[in-house]
Amino acid sequence: MASASEIKIRINSITETKKVTDAMYMISSVKMQRARRENEKTRPYFNALREEIGELLENIPENNNRYFRILDPEGVKGRAMLLITADRGLSGSYNQTVLKAGIDRMKEEADILPFIVGEYGRQHFTVKKLKFADNFNYAAQFPTIREAQRICTDLLEYYNTDRVDQIEIIYTHSTSFGTGEIRRKILLPLEKSDFYGSANPEENIGKEYLPDPDTVLNGIVPPYLTGFIYSALVDSYCSEQQARMTAMNTAGKNAEEMLKKLRIQYNGIRQAAITNEMIEITSGTKALRKKQKKAGTGN
Image (cartoon, rainbow, N blue to C red; front, side):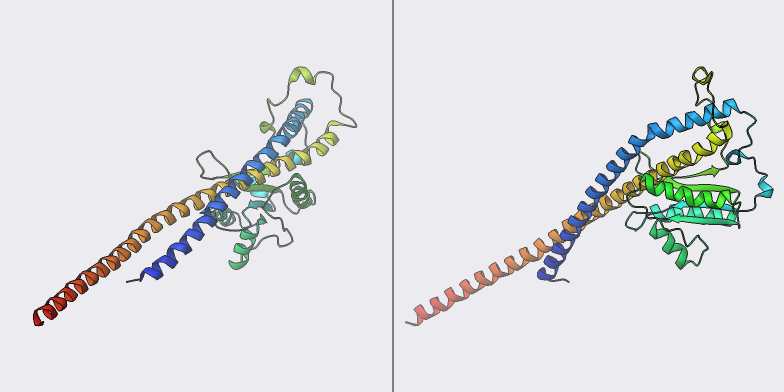
């Protein structure tokens, strides 16, 4: 059985650990709220781009733009997959869940090439000796529009040079329940049906697109994709912070339970020690009285 001093050391150690988990909980909460505010600021701009694409498609319904081309599923030459993970762990099952979704997708399509955001994901693929784009190095922490633009540019380079015919994204959608929801979406080619109803036909009357609608569309699609990627980065980042908050909250509760048991054990040992001391004092007092009584009788 552990001594009182050993239990005291363990209590102090767990108390310090709980301070760390509580601090990490608060930090994750602040990070999540800040990311959401930044995303809300940019949302109107990207919604406007979506509406503009809808208007263009209404003007040119028979458009054969490369971003909207129809692929034969059997004839896809290559696929790219943007997989968003975290930079580090301590976030429950967040990383394991999204990595499983990505690896399962690779089992379905042998020609798919993962582009991984987040150091945790890249390390996992390296350890497992799985293929991925090793010249694609982007952090998951503090997502920005500039970072989303660079990611979009890298992916479009593969698409525009026909190295891949399809680009998809797998990320984690944050929910109000605190549990992330894995989502998969085809980024390219785009589906025209995704933009139907986004434009106002009355506002579209008399509009002209120079030099031509197709050229304008080629200029609008990359920023639109940037916005979607940025939103997915923020969504995943918020989900990561939610998962970390849940993990730290659980760790804090477990620490409280451990401290409660250790304090009971510590107090029990101390109470037993005090009881033993009192018994020793009482026994010593009785023995002293007997000795004094015997000494008085002898006189």
